[in-house]
Image (cartoon, rainbow, N blue to C red; front, side):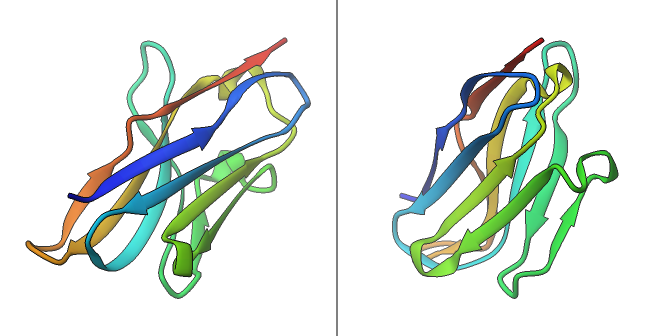
Length: 120
């Protein structure tokens, strides 16, 4: 069974930095895109950044320059480095990946989410 497990996050003061990581485990043949989404209280889940297997990245415009997504394909791991954090970055951050499992078809997988809280 394929799973995405996030780690990291926590509480930080405004202006600080945090990183989160996500490992895809299980019987995986291939992973194309890995991404981070976030959902703040009372708001819809939104894309933060994504990275392809070739290393191409894209970010939501408002986060460019502060957040950096990276990936270690050998470890099926995606990272999100968050700098100059603002209180409005407070949210649950979710890992997402397009995965081909050994048994099955390409599909979207989600992690359970990790809390990031930025205090003012």
